[in-house]
Image 1: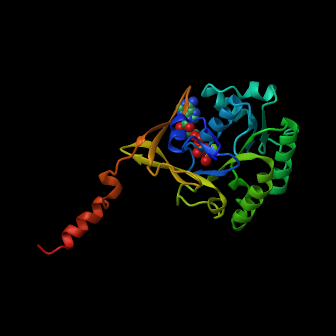
Image 2 (image 1 turned 135 degrees about the vertical axis):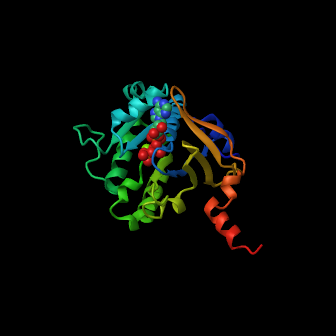
Image 3 (image 1 turned 60 degrees about the vertical axis):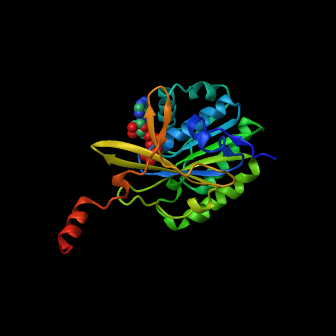
Length: 257
Ligand SMILES: Nc1ncnc2c1ncn2[C@@H]1O[C@H](COP(=O)(O)OP(=O)(O)OP(=O)(O)O)[C@@H](O)[C@H]1O
Ligand SMILES: [Mg+2]
C-alpha cells in the first residue's frame, strides 16, 4: 500500500518529499532563530485547515495573537479557522484566562492539554504543531530525549501527524539538549548564512523515514503574502568547499618554492 502523506502547504517542499509527511509521523524542524521554522509550522496548519483536518498549534515563544497575525501576513486566516472549530491554538506565554493556556512548561501538562484539544475538535485525522518543543527542557537539556520519546509514544495513539520545532543556538549552531533528532521520524534542518552582507536561509531534509527525499540543500525565502518559498538547490560553490583565505595564504607562505 502506498504511504499516505500530508502535504506541508509548501508546494515545492512536498515535491522534495514525495508528497509530504507520512501520516502519523513525528517530524522536527530544527535550526537557528529566524530561519523559517515557525513559518513552516504555520503553512502545515493552514494546509490542515484547507484539508479539513483537526488542527492544534502549541506556541511557547510567541503569543496566540502573534501567530494569528503572522499567518494573516501570508494570506492565511487562522481566526476564521478558530471560530469554526477547525483550529485550537494553545498558548504557553500569555498565561491569560483562556482554557487553551498552559500554566507551566511541563510535558505532562502539554500532553493533557493537547488531548483535551483533540477531544474538543472531534474525531478524524489531526495535525499537531509544538513550536517549540525545546522550550520544555531549556532548564534540563538532559531530559530532551526522554521527553521527546514520551510525547511521541503517547500521541501516536491519537492519529496525530506532528511537527515540532527545536532551536539551535546562534553562537554554536548546537541544539539545547540531544534527543528530538533521534526520536523524530523526519528532520527538516534550517540554516542561516550571511554572505555578501545578505542573510540567506537554507533548508535540508536530513531525514524522512519511508521516503525517497531530496538530498540537496535548497535556498529558501520568506515572502509577504505567500510564506515559505523554496528556491533552487544550491550548487557546490567555491566558498562552500574552499579553505578560508587566511589559511590559504599561510599554506602558500609555508610551502617551499
Ligand atoms: N510578512 C513578512 N514578509 C517577509 N518576511 C517575513 C514576514 N514575516 C516574517 N518574515 C521573516 O520571517 C522571519 C521569522 O521566521 P520564523 O518565525 O519562521 O523564524 P524561526 O525559525 O521560527 O525562529 P525562532 O527560532 O526565533 O522562533 C523574520 O525574521 C522575517 O525575516
Ligand atoms: Mg519560531
